Every structure is written in structure tokens, then in C-alpha cells.
Length: 135
Length: 135
Image (cartoon, rainbow over all chains, first blue to last red; front, side):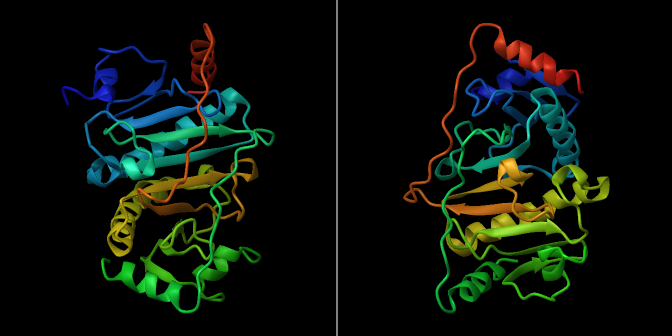
């Protein structure tokens, strides 16, 4: 798409610290890394969100992500990693071209996950039923 | 695996608020939700981490996740969602059976992402090169 930052990176119109690519996917460093080596993976084809990615891309991207994630861990000597996708602004998606974050993690890095709540009474079953209506 | 909490849920030895399942994958509510409707998706087959998941599972799980994520958004009337996988303890993995989190998000929920850093000088290129050695 003409005005998409990531499409421009895919087409090499904007430079990036590329880590890997194949015919359909590309991986390059996030220039604002949570930890150094934080890598973005995306389909080259423009999809606004993950929910817009097509069947073929869905069937192939996890092999690509697994391969890149393994290399990120090895190349940064990380103790683990997070794989994260933010779908829409409310979830922190800043560029409207579906992309995954691979964030190398270290025992000492101190990042905490969001706090977890609890369900009261019958609430969990009600919510599960509400989701199941759409499946 | 005998002592795996999620294998026991898969085999219905432990109850869960199941949202959906097919032959290979299952989705059920996280009982400690970041937001209500927070759903876990995993292969039924035991893999300790995402890096241990096999080719066939990798090729199929994203279709399953996309379908469930769409239903989570619809069922919770969310404004977006995060898809997250924690690989190993350093990344927050608490159960050693690979699983993805689908976390419904709302404009008003106030959760913040981890702060982003910067690369200095030639550092980004050096790190990209280090990762590329393993690809």
C-alpha cells in the first residue's frame, strides 16, 4: 500500500536492519527495541491486521517465525522470548500492516506481565458461552 | 505428558471453560484473565515450548487462532486484542506446554506496553548480523 511504512521497507524504499526474508515474509529489527534484538516479522503482502491475513499466509508464517525466533535467541544469547501481535490501536498496533514482535528476554530484564484478574460466580461460563456463539 | 496441567485439561481430567476445539487444538479461558475473555490456545499434543512444535502444528495453528481471536473480539465486544506467547520462564511461561494468549483489549483498559529503548551507533547492524549468523 502506497502510504504504508512497512510496505516501503518491504520494497526497500526505506532502509531497515533486515534479519531474514523469503518470498512471502520479512524479518527486521524494531528500531525501538524492548530488548536489543527485538525483531518484527510480517507478510510482505499488505494486510491491515492479523484478522485480514489470508489462509496461505497463516499456513506458512509460523514456520518462518519459529526459524527467526530460534536465531534471535541464539544471536542475542537470550533466556527466552515473547512472541506478540497487537491487533488494532486499542491493543497497541501502531502500523497498520500486520506484524509480529519477537522480543528476546533475559532473567534479569525485569519486565512484568499485565496483572491478572479473577472471575466471580458464574461469570467465566457466561463469557465462554458468549464467545462460543461466534464459533 | 503425565504431570502436565494442560495435558490434563486436554484429556478432560481437569475441567476448563472450553471455548472451542478441533482434532489438534483447544481453546479455553485463562482463569486469571488480564481482561475478561482472555483465552488460551494450544496444540493438544504436548510440546514444552513453541520452538518444539512440529511442522504440521505450525502450519495449522494460525487458522485456529484467527478463528478463535475473531470470536473473542465479537463475544467480548473488544476494541482489539493481543496475541502473545511466552517462551520459557524468563519470558513468563508458567506451564511447560506451548500455548498462546488471546487477550481482548479495550481503549479504556489502561495496559501499557514495555518501554522501548534505542540503538547507539553501529549497534543495530551488529545485532542484526549476529542474528543472521543463525539463519
